[in-house]
Image 1 (cartoon, rainbow, N blue to C red):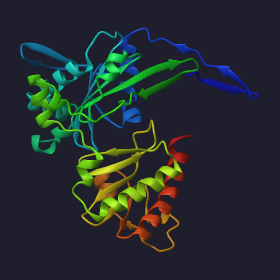
Image 2: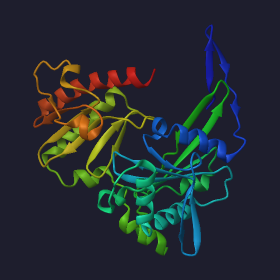
Image 3: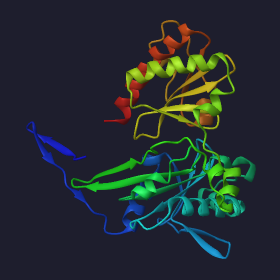
Image 4: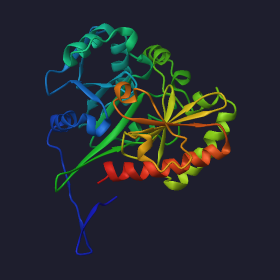
Amino acid sequence: MAIFSIKNNILQSISENKFDLEHDIQKITEQNLETIFGLKFISGSLNQEFSVRAQEQDFYIDTLAFDEATNAFVIIEYKKDKSFSVVDQGFAYLSAMLNHKADFILELNERLGKSVARADIDWEQSRVIFISPEFTNYQKNAINFKDLPIFLYKVKMYENNILEYDPIRPYRTTESIGNLSKDKTIQDVSKEVKVYSEDDLLNKVQKAKDFYESLKEAILQIDDSLIFHPTKTYIGIQISGNWRTIMAINFRLNQLILDYTRSEPKDFDDPEKKLVYRINSFKNLGQHVSTLTVDSDVDVKYGVFLFKQTYKRFKEQFEK
């Protein structure tokens, strides 16, 4: 789709510029990793690329990052050519990591000055991100699995220093790659790495499922482009193209626990005084969190009322 700028109510086309080198994509991404993906940079072109030797092959990691929200490693690879298999390469990198966990932990601790132990890492939520100016239809179709820990981002650079990272969404995600593929590497990795879905959380609850479906329907009426992103323990609501979670939905058997991020109860119009501040949330989560417990359909409506406020505040703060 063409991109335009507006000048005196006249649309002017913005031209796309080409990246000269793969390294150019890597450098600008690493320098802004937290802004783009919310990830902590560990190693890459800005210091020294990390590598491990697995199956008599050296695996050089373009960018090694860490997701503090999930306590999981993220491997980022950059491509300018189109002749590669995202599935084969992605699982090869994940396999190398799972077979050399100590090396990855050592790299994390030395680079960031941490003292993380193996048990502190959530290996289940490891993932690989491929970033490229272009993907083939074959590569786009290759990610059509519900449990694939591989994500594609198309990067474009335009004149006037405009840069775009556009996620490639799977066309459909009904099949499991672990069930369809007989490849040993894919089978082994799939036993340890998991991509979570709404059903993984909803199948464990009863009344809370009804509350969630009503809540989701009402929130999508506010903005139907909002993304409901499942994780191991909660479903986060995000604005498309922004990694920050506006609200996290946690599940109990007959309750929803709604965490409104980057906020304190004083930030809301809360006439019924139902919001509670998460004790030590800033210390533990790096941000203030206000919580609402949903026990009834009335609470669902009140939760949406509060969400509208935090959604507006979020847009004003992060989409200027």
